[in-house]
Image (cartoon, rainbow, N blue to C red):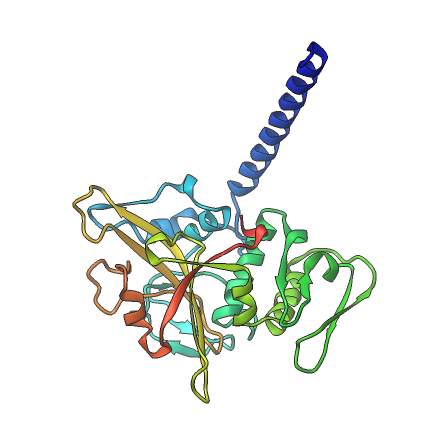
Length: 300
């Protein structure tokens, strides 16, 4: 390569690395700002999941740098005070506090926020936090996808069984909380557990990280059961001799919609942390399930 080509390669490499550094700095600034949860008036770190649920003795939380942005965001979700009950969107009692590890402080403002709907809602809230709203999309029940960038510039329609999406061009609308709520509600309507798995890869429980999910789909009966649980945090043993070598904290929604909460194991050996294989024991009525990793780019 001649000197001119070498100089061009050096300059191009320098510009690429500089741009990458700027993007990383912008991302870090957004992720670490004071109020990462736009659904709250203000965020108090002392109420976070990391504070409320310390690692059990002999364990430590996994390195935050190994997590996706969505995973890190989940580990800091705010909690309501101890003793709060699980309620439905009409503030009617569903579960007493002793049956759950605690209630997460995510306002339940829609009937569509069932177990699957709350996963979509949290993903959309994370995208808003990172100013990635225009990257949000979900595969539909047919060959279409619902795309937020199109949603905000027009209107979606669907056929009677929600298997086909139609889009009509319109005027640009502002991106705000109310618009995101309407988009989430519609997304929950035109997607399903089957479409959720279109953007997932199956993983083992031993590989599960914050932001991964556990999905149960039992279509064998006249009243099929579907459910999804979110991996909220993971701890590892301080030494190779610790058994089990890792524990998981799970976030759970209900169907019909009710408060998003932290699951409590049947045998509370590690308080609210689950050893491998113990989640299915807790959710035995839902049948077998599998762990998956979400590959939606706006959650990276």
